[in-house]
Amino acid sequence: MNTSTYRICLIEDDLIMGEALSDRFQLEDYHCDWFKTGGEAIKALSLNHYHVVVCDIQLPDINGEELFKQLKASEVVLPHFIFTTGYGTIDRAVRLLKLGAQDYLTKPLDIHALLKSIRTLCSRTVCNVTRDTMLGVSSAMRNIEALLPRIAQNATSVLITGESGVGKERLARALRSRYDPAGKFPFVTVNCGALTETLLEAELFGHVKGSFTGAIRDKPGLFELANGGTLFLDEVGEMSPAMQVKLLRAIQERQIVRVGGDKPIKVDIKLVCATHQDLKLMVEQGKFREDLYYRIHVIHLLIPPLRERKEDILWLTERLLEDWNTANADARTLTSDAEQAILNYPWPGNVRELKHLLERACILSQQTQLSAELLFGDAPSAPQEHSTSVESLSAYIQACERKYIENCLRINEGHIAETAASLGISRKNLWEKMKKLGL
Image (cartoon, rainbow, N blue to C red; front, side, top):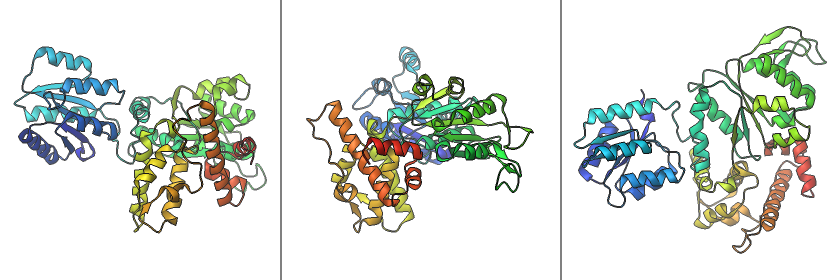
């Protein structure tokens, strides 16, 4: 086991014991964060991902058992918990194990027993979660992340939904990393809304030479290219009724026929679909096939919009700025006013809008610190505290969305296809939004 990829949260107020355990964990090549109070640990557990927590029962500010109960009540996805104490009783041990703790050790600690328990618990982790694979620090994203190992154990279809820009493809890639931690098998993606029906069919299923004008040679489709791996169909709700029938047949029979061909080709894929649309409503309206809906809707993962998971906003901002600072010599940070403005903004374009805004500000800024004025310019100001009605919030979000789309249109010189691609939506969806927003 490569222990260097595993993180341990040590909660121990005894300085001698804490230093000894911390040093030993480091020698064993674990990454260890040591906290001397329960309050510090609770904050760290809400912001970071750990694989195992080693927690003393007697802490200066809170009982370890109460700390555990508080964390469970907060619906934070918890790591494996090992409790240690010099005042062990059978009743307490049973109570903690019933609450969900994995182990309970009494002091003086048998370090070999502790390390064996840690190794066992770490080995249960299907995929190492690192900074690059974490989905977020909010309870919503951590709950989704906690489901991925269980989903990966079954080759079933997964449907990811959420507004445009929330990170559906990132979640699909995170799921793929659980299917295939070593990255040995292909991960193939296609935006179904970006292609016409004819092009999409040829793209998905391939074609044979001479099947249409320009088909100068045989070409495998994405189903074939994804064989053995994962096929990610983004904006599956944009498919025409005819393409829905062909996709359903391919999923049911686990084989495809190239355009212009007659030879069935077997494929073995894990299918992940995504859409910003309400497919259930589309089924009721007759716009999406009910049988296909149930085929791709075996597991449903809903990503909330960024404005509903504010804990992720500054965490994502920090990650994006770290990426910029790593790639560029001129490092960038945020002023306190900019941080507050970022938290107050409703992000109609979600994570994609946040990324574009920070990238633009980093390029244009001549200062190391990014101000709120540089970030938002003449974007709508944050709503006042007394403006709490649903109508006013809806109007505010609509105004921000209008401003965002206007800016993207200006950057892409009014080209609809390029603007839709930069927004991560189909041309049809962009036209609908522009009509709705009076653009």
